[in-house]
Length: 331
Image (tube, rainbow, N blue to C red):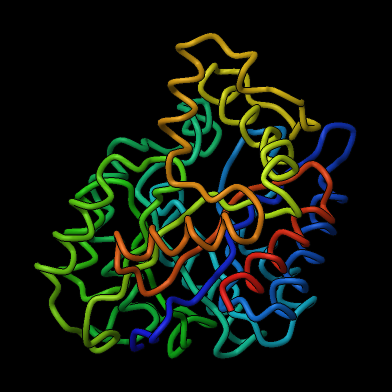
């Protein structure tokens, strides 16, 4: 993997369930969005593991990826990510080995240390997530060995062994940066919702990076909230749906994706507005020209090899159009 002259663009989709909709509709929308991303020239299409959330239908991530793979033919597909403390490495090796057998050369496996939900999920999964998180580095190493066969383990994963799965470390803190650097893996930073440690984490990752069989030099992906529309005003209105989702999540009342609300930010109390603006500071929302300028400034800041764009719209067609406008603007 080498750094392109211009950062590649990829897509992160949370498979949102819209108000009045259902998981079946959300999964159909995700497949249509992946087809749009593939046609527009995006490099990857990732979905993320979340549990127990009425507005997110991507919990069974490997199953969702099988659905996305069947709807596409060339775009890389993957998890952004699998929360490894929720699982054991052997089962994940089998799942992603199966995906590689179905869609060879297209599978990414981003690994995160957070549980992806609150402690009720730990009870439902029958997991001690605090203890499991402590074993995250060892579990990553074991998972890699299940794919590569080095070192050879007592039990082989079939499918799994020999699968050409591209492994990533995901993070929003210095821990993930250190681990990715030590293992010589590509690193993706969740700056779209946790931007505070972005610059420090990328500097640490690049400085401490050790080449590996998988990767010769550091490779960084950074996430942005991106909504492009015909005008700045239209994009701001569309983005009010994810604004509402962020506020609901931080208020402890997550739900389905809501329709856009004119002037939504102006309706918030100062504390919620400050929280929202802090979480959403790594964003590009506006006309194609505005979005292109914002992304260019972010690339100059991060020197990222890839940018992965997040952000949902209540109207699925508006998200598809946003992806098209963003790619057109940057090209």
